[in-house]
Length: 111
Image (cartoon, rainbow, N blue to C red; front, side, top):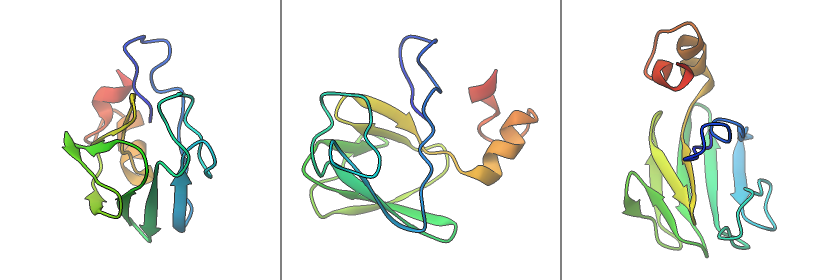
């Protein structure tokens, strides 16, 4: 889910990750609406219920730590991800069900 200082723009984009590799960037499977997101910015590799973010040609951070080109980091539900100047939060379908019902770690996002 995307996050924005403008409440109206927050939680407007949900990026569905396919099994295998999903690329983010101006040429990718997912193209976040930001000029700071570059061609080949980064990618997320999903294997079943687990996801890893792999750094690419753009500035990418997970929980405030830079992910360099070729580096991989596990994504956990609730992790903050920054691609260029585009902030997002990693959210998984199982936790969204609990969030919408007012339970689970993402419930605060829907209040």
